Image (cartoon, rainbow, N blue to C red; front, side, top):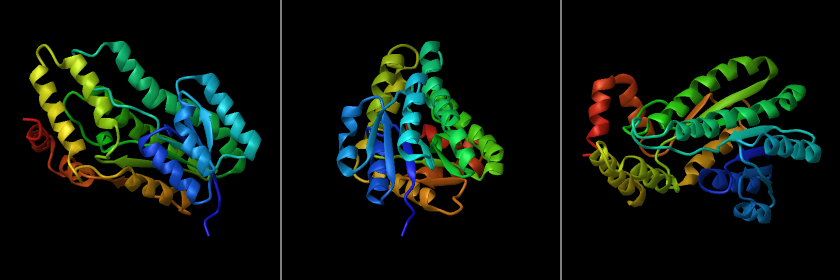
Length: 275
């Protein structure tokens, strides 16, 4: 029988976050879903979990949410940093305030809640931090510079954190999903076309939009969110979790090509999919 753990998961109102939260609740864990809209997490509450109103860029909400969990449960065993989004468009087109917002959510917001949780894990001399990166943290796609920059940053940030926290018996895990059947495709396409759908990058933007819609609309072209939820469950319950978990359509083959075939071959492979 699995030991019940106290878990906070950000971005729990939809997609991978919600699927993971529901699975962990069903496994008997005390799960606190955190997201900006509490109304979208009432199914977690109905299943036996808890809902925290939390924007990861709001320091007051982070402090209040973490305190609420510690006051009620006395500890936090696992933090799953899942909140994030993808900003797409040509570097030349995207205003820098949008780029900064991408980093505020995907990196600095993640860091803020991690920093708030860590003193409690250190006091207990145990814990697990799970950071949801992407296959995009090991590769790249056109018009995704700012999104990939945050995920590449998260990979290095997580590696450094793992070394720092090993002395306190705190594990740091990186999860690298491939193409997952969530709302990610819709969230990416419309802003990308708004940013770069006209002007010098319009053909590339529309080609990528069409390719993205195809990936997320075809049956079995993307993996269900449950694939990542299962990975999260394994990492949560493992006595010694892996430092990285890769799962989901296209993740392993694309990361393999990027690592072993070099930049030029990978460039051709990626661009062949958007013509």
